[in-house]
Image (cartoon, rainbow, N blue to C red):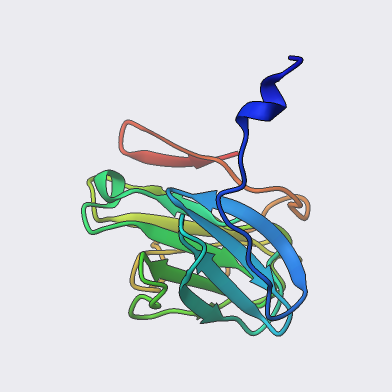
Length: 171
């Protein structure tokens, strides 16, 4: 609407210490930004860098974020590269067992959801070898989602997860 732009004001600006590769991704009151050199920064509402994580490669898609209410253990952020998955806490620290090195090339951002109860997470990644692999929040393979989980074609988009009657479904 005419005149609306005058109500907007700049809150902060920040010179970057590298080239922006992807993002920004809004995560709560922070912005995640992938920078050259395999770095992901979390920038707070005041423009200061809260944390920085180092990755071995570039992201293949946006992060997946689960809230404290969903996990029962604080916010969790899943970052996916072609070769590895990184599960971070709200301070940017890697969870035990991460990064997980994929047994193939990941073709789309992995998905993450709460399984039976808060605190039990499932992470699934589609691979170029027509496999879907699954891991828990400690980087351990999920039962039934190892190297034998074949699909008819290579998946190039983020998987969606649903549960019904104690069974997991990916589509």
